[in-house]
Image 1 (cartoon, rainbow, N blue to C red):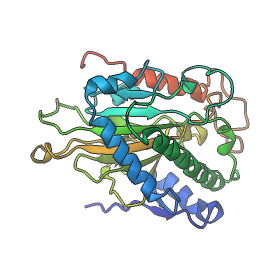
Image 2 (cartoon, protein in one colour):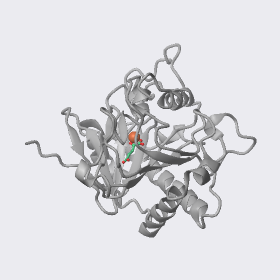
Image 3 (cartoon, rainbow, N blue to C red):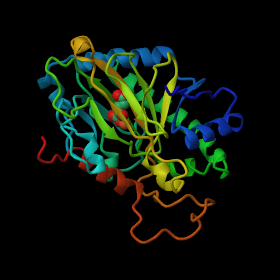
Image 4 (cartoon, rainbow, N blue to C red):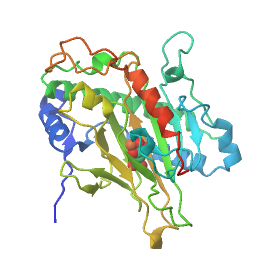
Length: 321
Ligand SMILES: O=C(O)CCC(=O)C(=O)O
Ligand SMILES: [Fe+2]
């Protein structure tokens, strides 16, 4: 049996002292948990509480904040609306999840320009929902910056190598709600299909419930991610694959179904903060890494183009739907 240990990294000593550990985890494991991040526990508790209240509303109420368009990832969508494995161009049945998203809470001045700056949608009649979500977005964003500083140092590029691409970031905070499963899933149908996230880092927190997150470790084995109270899980997204020329490949992950004998008491709420840079940032290798100082090959997409392409794919189903 393989024994998997998820690295747990305490950020308290600051980026210079933790960069090596972060770099090792990014290069050798692909995911890690962080403590000492400073996100207040009561804020996270309130985030879970207000969001559970939202998902408990009737669908016609949640529909009032329905996601407006495939490339405008804001608000709610119900079970069956995303098949995230489609982001990898692979067919699969729809995911057994609902979701709610917000984008940046500190939009850049001037009129919104394009889907990455679409305004957030807020459900009516839920006290403290908006304040709590906005506060959580700011906290995750702060922690994301700290992780990025460690990453820049670990790559030997200095603390601002990544943060330089996040002057007006379009990071998203997403809640994922996985309901009980009265009916058995279709063959191949998961709570969330296999995918890698689309941004730089993903920061994730979840309830400890059946039918949870698994990551594909570097040995090619699916591994359960333990929920460590107070810790935040960090995974690597597509931008890091490109920016490091595969030195730090994105983490493939999925959310499996609960066992049938647990399926009626298995609902699960999780949050993912996806760090998304300035939309105009290039997917080219970072300057200072091998290949990064040459001009980008023609056709190298921007982060905004990459994200938009993935958003559209994850809701574009083929014949399996
Ligand atoms: O439910 C989770 O723990 C993570 C879900 C996920 O990977 C995602 O939606 O990007
Ligand atoms: Fe994900």
